[in-house]
Structures are given as C-alpha cells and as structure tokens.
Length: 169
Ligand SMILES: Cc1cc2nc3c(=O)[nH]c(=O)nc-3n(C[C@H](O)[C@H](O)[C@H](O)COP(=O)(O)O)c2cc1C
Image (tube, rainbow, N blue to C red; front, side):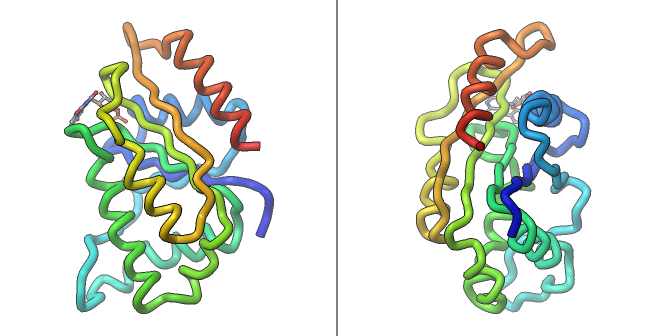
C-alpha cells in the first residue's frame, strides 16, 4: 500500500461542478481520480447477480494502491448522489462475499467533499460517511462543503479547500 490517495468522484456529469472542485483540490493533493459515472456499478443485489461489474475491480485497485479515499459527491436532494449511494451500498458485497478485500479497508483513511448550489449543507450530511468509516474500521479525516457563486469557486471555499488539503497529508 502506498501513502497516496484517491478521489472517488460521484457526480452524474464528469465535467461538472464537483469535477471542478476536485481539479482545484488536486492542484494541492495530486491524488488519482476515479470517475464513478464512467464505471458500470449496479445496485446492491442480495443474490450478487452483478458481481461481474466494475465494483470489485475498482475496490481491489483502491485497497491495493491507496491509503486515503476521498469521496467527492454533489448534493442531490439533500443527500449524496445516487451514483455515490449505489457505490456505498455495494460495500456490503465486501462484508458478505469478498471479505478479504473488505478487511483491507481497515486502517485506511476516509474523507468527503460535498458540492451543492447552497452554501448551507443539510444537517448531518456527513453521517453516512463518518459512520461507515467507523463501521469499516477506517479513520474519518473530515469533510469540506463547497459551492459556486457566479460560476466561480468563492474565496471562502478556496480557504476551506486549503484547510482540507492540509488534513489529507
Ligand atoms: C438532481 C439534483 C438535485 C439537487 N439537489 C440539491 C440540494 O438538495 N441542495 C443543493 O444545495 N443543491 C442541489 N442541487 C444542485 C447541485 O448540488 C449543484 O448544482 C452542484 O454544484 C452540482 O454538481 P455537479 O455539476 O457535479 O452535478 C441539485 C442538483 C441536481 C441535479
């Protein structure tokens, strides 16, 4: 396992606002980016009928190569995006059929970036991330909320992204 990190981008568009935030943050972090919109990752299935899709290879790549996972999600209807939630639900596969991969998450770091149109983030938006980290034995490093004003990243968001980047190293 290396000391580097990976950003999992969970927007429904690959070149939207979340990706602009990721690009800005990566001027400091230079983490690898995995665009979940470009992966074929199905919903959780009790019969594991989609075990041949991109979820397991993506997870194996992550646990073998990185120390920190940063989830970058837009705010859609006060929650994480559907793409991101589908990915989270599939982590259940790692508790049931792919336990060896799941065990490797223990001791890794997790963090979260949200990107909304509103400067206010719904209360406890970070809960599924922080609680899942605890459940999986991962360290939750923290989170940052971002938004745009006049199609620009506001100065206060840039300052928060700098603070967040400091926490990742
Ligand atoms: C389906 C949908 C639901 C949204 N719901 C919210 C919301 O609840 N709160 C909010 O602040 N912004 C909401 N927005 C605005 C997006 O969070 C915002 O435009 C964000 O920057 C989009 O990032 P993206 O370009 O990566 O999708 C919503 C946008 C969409 C498309």
